[in-house]
Amino acid sequence: MTHTADPSEATATSEASDASDPGRRAVLGGLAAAAALTAAQWTPLSRIPVGGAEATVPPPPGPPPGIAVYQQSYRNWSGELRVDDLWTCAPATPADVVILANWAKAHGWTLRAKGHSHNWSPILVTADAGSAATLLVDTTQNLTSIAVQTGATPSVTAQAGVSMDVLLATLEASGYGLTAVPAPGDITLGGVLAIDAHGTAVPAVGETRPYGHTYGSISNLVLSLTAVVWDAPTAQYRLRTFQRTDPAIAPLLVSLGRGFVVEATLRVGQNQRLRCQSWMTVSADDIFAPPATAGANSFASYVNQSGRVEVIWFPFTDNPWVKLWTVAPTKPPLSRQVTAPYNYPFSDFLPTEAADLLGQIIAGNSGLTPAFCNLQGATSSAGLLATLSWDLWGWSKNTMLYIRPTTFRVTANGYAILTKRADIQRVVSEFHAYYKGALASYQAQGRFPMNGPLEVRVTGLDDPGHTGVAGAVHPTLSALRTRPDHPEWDVAVWLDILTTPGTPYSGQFYRETEQWVLANYSGSYPQVRVEWSKGWGYSGTAAWSDPTTVGTTVPDSFRSGLPAGNNWDTGVAALDAYDPHRVFTNPFLDTLLT
Image (cartoon, rainbow, N blue to C red; front, side, top):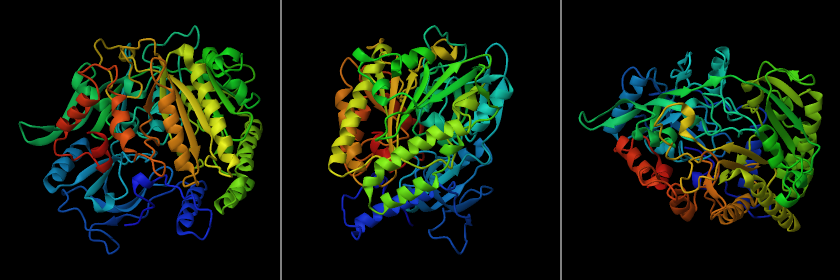
């Protein structure tokens, strides 16, 4: 088995300055591997069948007949988590997943549902999975059926392996869509629901929510789902369908992969035409100004204007890339109509000059980081003009999807700051002041831990009423859970900072930033919850490894202010009851979900 590091070491950094030091070489190797991933999408090695001469680990014992098992390598999005000797299969039907679950229970194996692996955190597999009796279950090959139900209460029923690209295109063809979605389309519906994936949207001032839409996570749209669960009377795993009004569904709406959802039905609404305007002419100081001095170009002002905002700010630059989506039923005169997504080709690759700078940074000249970041910003600004993509108009998916598999691979942390809408500017202003100061402090020491952008978005919280179903329950483990004791908290500000994997001092920087975030956004003003798919729980040298954050802080964020019948403890207990033989788990989840 070969891999870069244990998942707890996925963002490990070396603080050695001598390029001859072995730790230093490991860091540079990680940087080089990540840079290589920007040129083309990583594809797994050829399949090695059971009994193949190239197999490097013992095969699963007596796999069920009719379900082909093969050895294949695995990489996560950033390339930091690598396992080259995982056994994998691609069941043809949900019934096959049941067969696999009962086989795994009988043989002491675990099953991990695999989509397109566009994730960072080790909730799918840990780096020792190849030697830990783990079988990946690829949902993308066969579990991809989809059907749209039209009428007064439209919905879509799709299996877990359907990609968001396909889901949104199918909805568009029937006249339906979603208010907000994640930027990449190469993620599966099963993965989206496992980690309460989201986009960026709150209602603009004066905007009325259309029926069938939500400003929260996609998990909040679930009407029903079918999962593989343990059935005590028959002592077997079986398929069970849960309705949104059934409290038993709550933990499965965001299961973190501790369950296996094979199909879900989601409420949908009429599709919308969106105008997406981009500019890089306003300074970060103006956008993130303190509330007392914030003007027409403030983040909160943009939110009020359109409700759908994303700010992408490269370190050491003055003006961020601002994206503003506005509901626009008819095409504005200056907009360019688009009929397909992914309309920022300049962001799909590193230009030669930027690649050269990154190469020198990898070689140890970290002082070139400001130049590298400024070049990224300049490339974006020039690209918006050159491709006429500064003002786009089209159906929702064609302006919301913009990250391709070939986009520059970075590592990222992620936090949701729950607060009231009136405090959005305070949240972003405080973080901007901290982040800018922290970067300057590191720069003064000749250290440059961050060479990717800060991304800021805002969403509504998960309101079960948006399903149109009376009695719909709250998703237990969604970062966008409302707090009954804080009804004034109605939004979440999402903060993500990105850097090239393995950048020296990044682990230390992430640790310090996380501790500041947890301390600053607390009390009656806001609350912090982690973004499940990103990095968090930093020890200073590794993500997902600080025992206090993983074992106490994160669980408590789903206890505080939540009802005793639907909180962290009841959710974990329910997931354990659905899978008492721990078929759907891994060592990281065993630590987290206790």
